[in-house]
Length: 277
Image 1 (tube, rainbow, N blue to C red):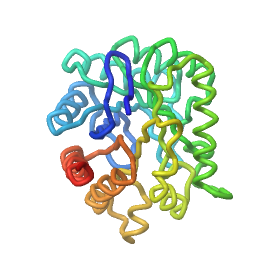
Image 2: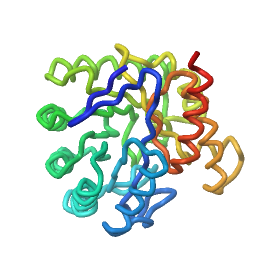
Image 3: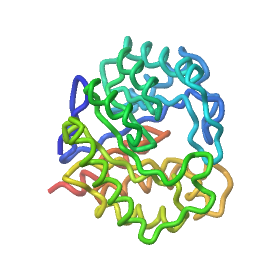
Image 4: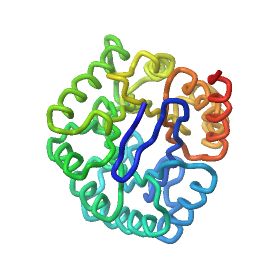
């Protein structure tokens, strides 16, 4: 299972990858404002890399439920200097977490290898940007928008509908000229899904794969964990996230997008040690 990105690739056949989350925003739900300048952001990224992160995912617009939109200039100002500065310090995989083609384009120009789009490349301009930039792609499923996605998410069958979206996007992207080996899919845990939808998607990870493409799972510190634990403390979600990293790897998820890198990396490696003969 090879996932190609600009300048490199991951062989995910036996060894999964950890994507470290670097939010350069003032309002993300669990770490907003922590990395408000370029120097602090790069320092945090290098620390995650030292702990085992394979990818650093840099985002300048919060996608928590109800979050306000960020204008283009502001998102560019938050993200591009960090991508550029990190590229000077590290030769590994840098992902830009954005739904704006303009942000993706500038990030690619200064060194981003991967585009992580929560809107699933439903914008034709984003498709062309990613194709021409020759980057790896994370195509995520989301019902609605971050502003409205948790109002009343409804599915007849969440597994069938999310996989159907993946199949449609796979066909569209490959017809548009993006090689299949550059595509990765993300079911979008918490993005327009109820607690029961999230549970179904986690347990159904093994049924979501399309054409052998890898699945990314992003559930770090998500609110559904707090619902299940009956706790409002974000800190109480850390170790359950680690448990879910191990569990979803056994079900087939290959890339895990997390805040706490070392603990989740250890859980991933332990799960793989037990999975392999």
